Image (cartoon, rainbow, N blue to C red; front, side, top):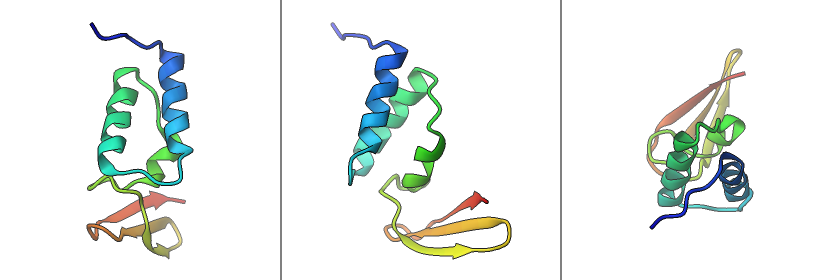
Length: 83
């Protein structure tokens, strides 16, 4: 039988995960599912991984007047964030 977490324990698990230096896509997928299950907002953590391939976000950065665009080094997807 699976043990269930409380919402505060799940929040601590999410926070401790994103404090790590590096992570892979499968780990991000599991943490996102955990956050969705307990209705936890990821907030600024969302900017640390690619929206498409879920790898750690590294690549070229382009800043315009209204947006910050980070092009993923792994898949080439342009992740846009409002400034």
